[in-house]
Length: 594
Ligand code: DGT
Ligand code: CA
Ligand code: CA
Image 1 (tube, rainbow, N blue to C red):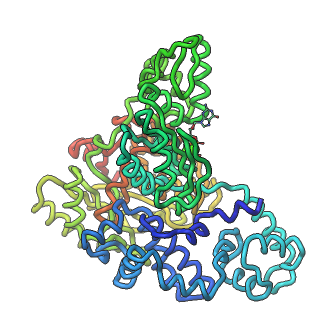
Image 2: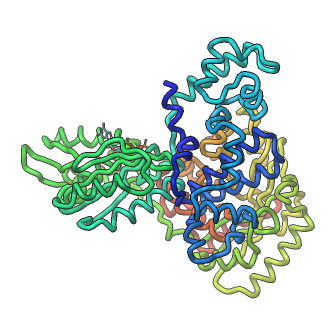
């Protein structure tokens, strides 16, 4: 049980020879932050590393390429000269001297201890100093032998909690956020594509289904028969490989330096569709399709669809579906949640596409915690093809984000009016991401909100209220005459913070009643609304706005993750608010004081 703990991503870092991707550098920065935290360093310094790590793991461009093009890294959000220097050092040398130094001061696996719920840096420090506990295995033994309860500030209950937490932790398999997996997948695709004899490379599995996290990558390669074993050989010697789990003539599995497993399968052209269908999954969808095939007297496997021993389909995915009497089902729907019945009766949704989006209703600028000016955001939005972009700064309660009060909001409205008069091709909408206070009131008075085109409301505090109280809080906010759109409706941060407990059906019904809307926040760490709630909103007739929550000009590209999530939630163009042209949108978001 305990052995598996050692394969966690942060530990695997020690095996990184040459960090290539933003995610690898992010792992190093997280490691530095953890070590600094155990040492009791300045919290601002720690936060700078954590913020940089998060920014890097989601940045759509590779910093190594920016350096190659001699671009200035200090243009990136949260990156000053010091961090820019460290990134350059890591990319150039594969090492970070600060981390090297911290590693000599503390044992390398000690940051693993921080992952056990209830163990903060202070406790980790005392476990290390008083009991010489440096690894999770040692922690487990110390707890089992009753040595922890005698430490000051620990006690018997804490000891039991630690034991339970370690057992729970050991049973968890590590998953990677979609955007992080994407950094590895794109580089690998390029690498495989360049191998002689390779015709097609595609990433299947949960990645293709746009799941919010993926367990491993499933790469499918179509090659000439003669090239297959060569493809496998090249794959296992990919420079980021730290472990080869298996290697045959047409398949292999490796672990990359960042800890991510990659499975490769090489297939012939004639089997491409069948293999792609099989390895895209989900497993439950595949099983249901195979049962259907059996009813038709057919056999489906990753090589094709067979009637007795004759192949009747398999070159394309569409041919596989057609063989069992179904329309083509897009990957995002393949979860065995009704898509097969819909495909058999011609009722599959026409899923929304990224090109359907005409604008974005959630973006920040330098006025609060964004990194670019109004003008820069407007021009980037225009270049992205938007017809409109709502500027939604934080409100005054969020002091750490320099939230706007009424006066600063009014000033920004003036600036937006001026900019709109000057710019062509894009319209900035005046808005705010106003805080929903604990009692459901909004953080700014009506007089401040009256001038806005729309009001986006969001919760940023008191996440642990009871279900009844949290739901009432949101309903109360929605009842406000100016309220238009509920941002990141469940507040979850993937792998970091659970959704708050709310009655989403009641919220959606209230939105319908009030003429309000819900956001699907496309930030890869949020992807909030959940797919099942998107389906619920669609059924109740509430439109969803797929928003980037951009804090910089680079963030609009996150919309693709939001669109993926929307498609997993069965949303069509007509279910999405920001597919509407501006004139229609204005009618939908218009509010009067009633
Ligand atoms: P993940 O990696 O946990 O995020 O999820 P997937 O869906 O990528 O799962 P993975 O990597 O274990 O397998 C890739 C696909 O291969 C899966 O979606 C469906 C197919 N597959 C795997 N095992 C089975 C199986 O036992 N039966 C069937 N019918 N298909 C399977
Ligand atoms: Ca997978
Ligand atoms: Ca797999």
